[in-house]
Image (tube, rainbow, N blue to C red):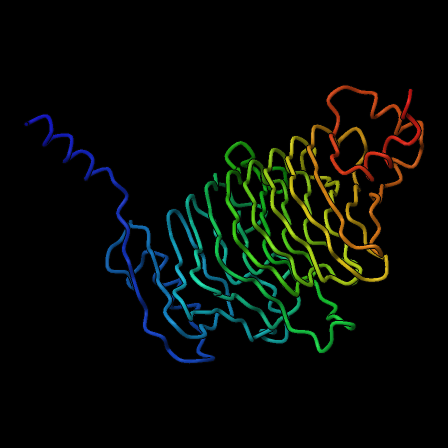
Length: 357
């Protein structure tokens, strides 16, 4: 009995406590950035210090014109009928480019319930409506196990589908500063093991941008009107070991869908698994299902399964100049353990000079 009591006391004393807070809805167009940061940042606004917070937003349109920061184990919950919007696109004459939310602590999360929308009416959030990772290129810290699920992320509504808005807006930006030349704490900086699930992303130029972030699980994503006029739904830049599955990219005029980009400050883009990725971008054949803008020596061990369901879209991958030489392509695919492409049209594209050899 004494041993049992001791174990119960030890477990209760080591468990991470969490304060649950439910702020009152202030009304439409009232900026709550400062209030939410006050509650999350463990200062005098919060009932107890050194605790993570669960903040529950009830029904209503909550305005956030700044950035709300979620640290270790902080959680934002959107109840049915709750939505978030940004309306202020300029502050003191300068573009308001900061994300609405920055998840920069382990286990930080944003969780919706039914059709919750996080929307910006501004078109220049290059660091995402939601950013997961280091706030800047100098901050140290291991950021792991963050989660975003069951929400819709949306940009400005265009006047017409045939004339989509031109902007530089990213839905979710996973950012790891580990290899930035300005970071003096590379060995202490990571951005791994996050989960993005059950999301709709629409009216953005980039849907999800994974920069130097590894071993994330991303699944059940619908991209709607994403990447129009030359943007992209999914951008992987120097990222490894990510599991990406059950993706549908549709109704996105002349968009690119899956893009691999080389980065000067990133690792190689390898060991990623991308499965059940369906492309239905439409348009007049100006977009590509896949773009590989990476030297062939830095792109390998990726498992990719794409299918394209539109007769006017370009099925074949767009390759960087490094791949333009057929001899290079032949040499590349004769090496062991290179990328396995499961879509037949892509297999023919990459191997048209080696089939039967």
